[in-house]
Length: 393
Image (tube, rainbow, N blue to C red; front, side):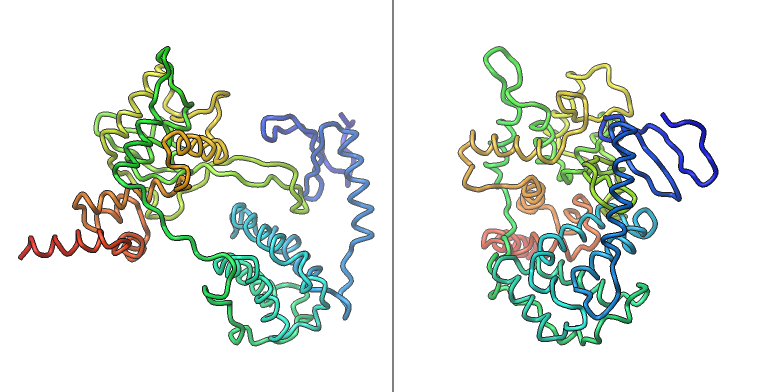
């Protein structure tokens, strides 16, 4: 490790990232990581070289791609942790990397953009992506091009963005996926599969299957279930408190460049999401199983752990669901983890719950969200609701 710090120099330390120990050099609030001090010093030299070579020259030849990248990493990244969440920044970056950089618009001079150019760009996106993906990308791009607080905003030509239209659903390559609902029979089939045991009495699947079974009878979101701790569970009264959600973000250096994945706990999706709700008996049976498997657990321990003792990742959970679908003959349905939550809401409706109750159990911010998803999704649903009105008569 380096010797005593001199005036004007940065500081050295060691930090853990994704369970690995890294050397870290900090100066002026910026950090550089490496597996050794030598690697960090090499990175510092390389950054210094790149800074000299890639400094954006703000003139008439500036491209759209250069301007957007500069805005993304030199302005928006500075907002992370202040007014912007890491996951939101990751979403901005993913949208631009996938659906802007690599397209002709990115190489076009910024001074040349106008309504026609931007409308053509959206039509190009329509040949490959869904309307929702195009809409998200357009929101980020226009956020950049209309950001009058950015230092170089005066270089952006005046464009009437309200006149530019996002391609309609009928004109995009990837159509909107219909919301899928597991039926009662499918839910029970998957639940029993999740808890299946082998001939020697051991469970066929790992804890990801138990997590999925819990979602089927509680309606929790995937990240909420993965982030559950024993302190969130009231076993006696069958209540669960959603206090956090477990998610994955990119760990980044001081310039916003990716250096590895990191899993974090964050606040629930919305104020409505943070609540205490009851869960069904079969979800309680899953909790009893986990309690028996880990009798020495502490209050702050996660309920659903991987084999190496860490919370379950989205990839692990999805892989387990795919296996369960295959073994139950439901592979063609291609249900997602979130579809199990939809199935919970749909079955509640069939069992007689009203929309207000379902909305509260699923913790939607607006009851209209619940109504849009669950009312009239199938002719059977409409018949159920109609039959109820006749009973009232």
